[in-house]
Image 1: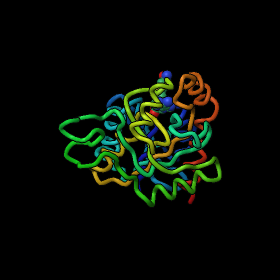
Image 2: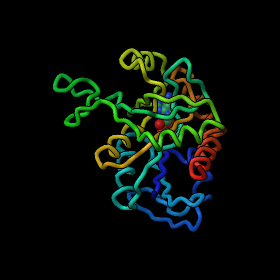
Image 3: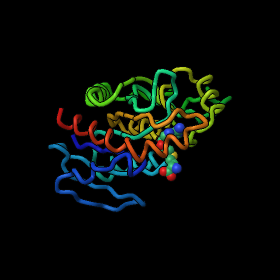
Image 4: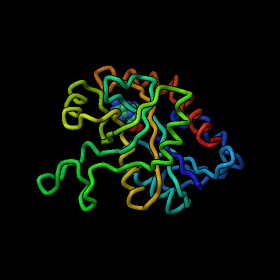
Amino acid sequence: MRLGIISALAEEQQGLIEALQSPARHFHGMREYTAGKLWEIDAVCVLSRIGKVAAAMTATTLVEKFGVTHIIFTGVAGSGDKNVQVGDMVVAESLIQHDFDASPLFPQFEIPLTGLSSFATDVALTDRLAAAAAPIARVHRGLIASGDQFIGKLTQILALKTALPDVLAVEMEGAAVAQVCFELGIPFAVIRTISDNANDDAAVDFMHFIKTVASRYAFAVIENFCKA
Ligand code: SAH
């Protein structure tokens, strides 16, 4: 296994790059890829920057240029469900692009020419990631929705839930990585710590959470995952 680890923001991956043994840094396409060993696992860590295009470009580069065979995305997200609280973690079983709409040519949310509106994560990686997270936080498994919007208004999250009632968390990158991995045949998994409730308080809650909790959780999960 050569594992690619992607996060959008520096706070979501703090400590991991420092934990890499014999790190080798490469700059490519406005991103820094650091390769090395993480608890005996061959790994490449990178910050994708924010949004679906940024994440897709990063995932593709990890595979095509850095030869990763598996990808994990770790980051924060807004809650999409009453039972999913700030500080909980959501491990994706599938991901959907909530802002994709080529109707009436294709059904809303369907990615043209794939016949799919959501992409399933790899079962083995997802199980291992959920097990790694279990000692750290309350873990939920299910659907994560991604789009090029910060969901920071109650009206936004209510509209999204009406269209997609099963969504557990909302973020801005996961489903893009999912589509890339589906098309390239790369097993992948996504874990998100809930930083906010995707409502009118989301921006303030997000800023606080990202500074205080995000990196500690991500680091512990990846450590458990690699040691398992
Ligand atoms: N002002 C911030 C912008 C972060 S955007 C900054 O400059 O750093 C929010 C990031 O966290 C995205 O990468 C997204 O994946 C995730 N996220 C957390 N809460 C979210 C929400 N409510 N809606 C959408 N994305 C959210």
